[in-house]
Amino acid sequence: MDLAKELDVYLRARFTLIQIVSHEEERAVQDLRTLCEDSGRTLIAWDVADHFRKLAGDGPEPQPAKDPLSALEAIEKIDGECVILLLDFHQCWSGQPVVTRKLRNLAQSLKYTRKSIIIISPSAKIPDELKDDIVVLDLPPPGHEELSEILAHLEKTPGVTVALGDGVRERMVSLALGLSESQARRVFSKAIVTGGVLDETDLEIIAKEKQQIIRESGALEYYTAAETINDVGGLELLKDWLIRRQLAFSEDAQAYGLQAPKGIALIGIPGTGKSLTAKMVASLWHLPLIRMDIGAMFGSLVGESEQNARTALQLAEAVAPCVLWIDEMEKALSTGDGDSGTSMRVFGTLLSWMQDKKKPVFIVATANDITRLPPELLRRGRFDEIFFLDLPNTTERRAIFDVHLRKRGRDPANFDLARLAASAGGYVGAEIEQAVVDAMYLAFSDETSPGREFTDDDICAALEHLVPMSRSQRERIDFLRTWVEDGRAATASLPESDAVADKAPALQITPLPRADGPDQ
Ligand code: ADP
Image: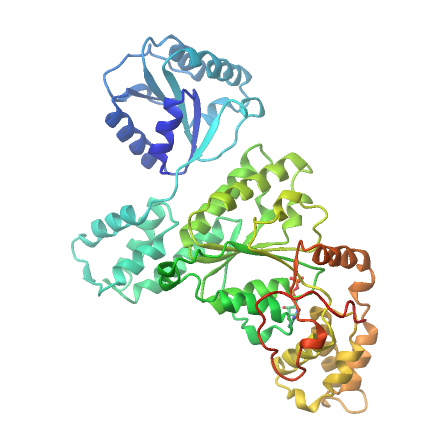
């Protein structure tokens, strides 16, 4: 639903206090003016500089008022039906308990009138006392049509040469989705000014500018994922699941009647390859990867954290189709102001968005510790699948050694992979990689033969020096294994007996239960 329709519903339902959060005041005012003109409502604006003025309709006139409190008193006295728009009012209530109180009183008393107050402000900061009285709405960024108009307008700038072939204009507009009107104008203008011609080469400028703007938004980060499926050792069932959905976002899949997958949750102790998998999904599916730092969303003021979450999710939708990687979800519960209510509200924002999202945003949510997450987050149906990444079994450890030796330009055939895999029981992927790196340092700085090639012995020695995390995480691993046994999560790995040592195992459709149990 766009903002005008949503506002119309709230106004008709007699909501008396509404806040629109947006940096784009002009756009919001324009939307509101159109809504009021179309529906025959009177719209009156007030701000601390220009006081009351009428923007639409010929309804009642308020008495003049210069300060915020007098303005609220004047609104109370208006006789008739109207919508009153208060601009920058968030500056008027800070440190002004009388203004906050009056607004609260009005929220109640206006229910018996045909008047509503709308506040437009760039941030969602609301005094605690007003939280229950205000409905907060977001102004979504401009859509395809609006952006096309902006671009078309700029193309008419005198002296600009436009050489946009078939589909390039379309791609240019799609790239700008998620930006505000002024940001889009800035980005398009920069593309036009650079080189004096607007052509296909400008797509790159626009993409870069957009990445920069998203980065500046704080809670989201654009990732260029280089990790391919060959960089992930083991986790064959998880890979299989992903390969099968490789074309799920294509137009053909849509035409076939397939719904785009919603997302997966990856749970397991640190170092088991959850982040690696998130990056791999994006490159496997050729989709942009956006990482959400849920801990960074926490602001110190009421409403700020949820607003940050909403802004981030809106941006993700604008970039769709994309992979949204929500990293270490449990961090949301350990950061911020220690107020678990705020964390729960941020999770609430996330959950309702997951429920309602219309755009193809595939979520990869990772968590090391699920005991602290709200249970409804991992309830069946929320994600398409919850995968448990267990300690790698022997075959997987072998594959992980293979990956990391190849990554460092070594031929795995020169190493005894069976011995290495056997020595690395209980170690996770990150620790196996660490052992390879440590072995290289060990050999390179060898006193008797500096710079010599590293061997199986060096890797085994490095492993011995590392204390595997699984030792201290035993309880957590056992707890997660019961999730698989209870059918609440799927295992990411093929059971040992089915895996073929030297080549990728055959793909399976249904995740199989772990047949061998822990193999350490
Ligand atoms: P997590 O997100 O589960 O804490 P990561 O994905 O960040 O773990 O793992 C850290 C690094 O360890 C990865 O970047 C990768 O180099 C290595 N690693 C972990 N698991 C695997 C695996 N299954 N195959 C290959 N490398 C792995």
